[in-house]
Length: 304
Image (tube, rainbow, N blue to C red; front, side):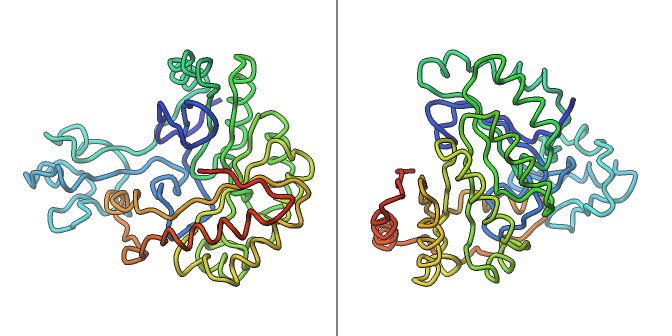
C-alpha cells in the first residue's frame, strides 16, 4: 500500500498532545482561500520553484523537452506543459526547482516516524496524519493507522470531514475515528453560503458528519475553528458557531488565530494568495470570542 506524501514534519507540537511527527498527505477537495498548505491540494506530485534561489542561468529553459520552463515566467514553469520528467530539477545548479510529493509505502512512513519514538514515550506524543485532507487517501490512511496501532503509538487524524462529498464520507470517517486516539476536526465556516464561497464546497455534510462523530466518539473529537477577519469572525458567524456547538452534548474546541505563515508557498506552485491584504485578528476580538464560547456549559475550550 502506497500513498503520496508531501512532507513529514518532526518535533511537531501543534497537531495533538505531546511531541509528534506529522505526516502530510496530498489531495484535498476543499479550496480554502486561507489554506496554509496549498501544495497539499493537488492529489498528485507537482513541481515547485524557489524564486529566491534562482540564478536565472537559463539551464532549465534549455533542457526542458516540453518547453515548460521560461525565464520570462515569474513562476518559471508552465504547469500545464510540465510532465514532471525531472530534467530541469536534475540540472538546476542551486536546486531552485523541486518535486512536491512522493510515493511512499506504509513501511517507509513507519521507518521515518519511528525515529521519534523516544519523544512519544517521554512527552505523551505520537503521530498525526494530516494533509490536505488525509482521508482523500483513505485506503493508505487505514493501512498506515493499523500499523501505527500495532506499534502502540498515539494516533491523531486531522480532517475537514469532507472527503468526496458522498454518503461514504461518514462511513470512512467513523471507521478511522474508531481506530485512532484523537480526531482533529476542522470547522471552517458555519454559514453555508460563506462556506461555499470561501472553500469551494457545501458544508451540509461536514456539519452532519461532525454531529455524528461527536455523538459516537465524544472523548476523541476536538473541533478547531480558525478565526479569520472578515470571513468567519462577525457577530453572526460566532452566533452560528455557538449555536452549533451548543447542539453537541460534550464538545471540545480550539480557537485558532488566522496567520500568514503559508503565503510564500503560493508563489512556489505558481499561484496567487487571494488574502494577501487580510489583517491578522485583533487579540481583543479573539478573547471576546473565546469568552462567548466558554459560556456554553457543554463546551470545553482548549488553549491552542
